[in-house]
Length: 291
Ligand code: NAD
Image (cartoon, rainbow, N blue to C red; front, side):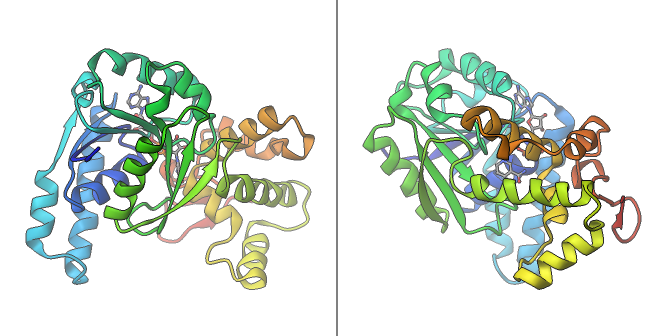
């Protein structure tokens, strides 16, 4: 099946990046959110990011204008229904995602493929609550979407081959590379990355190092471009905690228990860059460690 239009549900950090790359690749994009503010901010951010690409000579001003004209936004979820492929990128909470798919079902074309950008929730379980588990997949972009090369494609137990091929062809047209993963908690990237971030928070919690020494140690000692705490702030501490909980619940192994300090930051609403405070405080000119 040829995909020409893409619906995106959730206009947060990931939704805006997904809209950006899809529109540049020539897809018609309909992006929805429950928050008008989020939609406005997402469009402004895509516009600013594309402008930077024009300045750097990566795209032309005409390509930017054409791509921006392909992005429509709506507060009305049913308007996303008649697209060829829907990528759900709303808050990492299973009840939120289930409600979105339930509300979408009456408005879909029979051929519409449903996907979720979830970092960790079972694709098979999300799919089982829809009328089309065979046309359901995990479509997992990395953050920031316009920069990162990888997309994890996750087959649920029922996903059929035409659905996989259609999603793979979208990844190719976006100029990205697909890694296929089986549907087990947190798939590949986050199964490995999140326990490392959680361990960095334990290292902080137990006083082995402070924010600066932990991030510096991992950057210079393992050649990671960002330290784990800086990366956690970038991803969003609520998302990190949600993924650790999925690993802990789904694999029933205490090695995945979320660090109490991570929970405390989330309880404080210190979610990282998106709230201007996390392991670093971003409200001034340069980030300042909060511990
Ligand atoms: P975010 O908090 O930045 O954005 C979530 C958006 O969803 C918000 O704008 C919110 O208003 C919207 N939303 C909430 N309920 C909704 C509903 N019922 N209908 C429509 N919109 C709704 O979160 P994010 O970082 O963009 O993450 C979104 C998804 O992408 C999550 O599933 C997350 O696990 C996944 N993901 C995140 C990252 C990352 O690094 N942040 C990377 C890969 C995948």
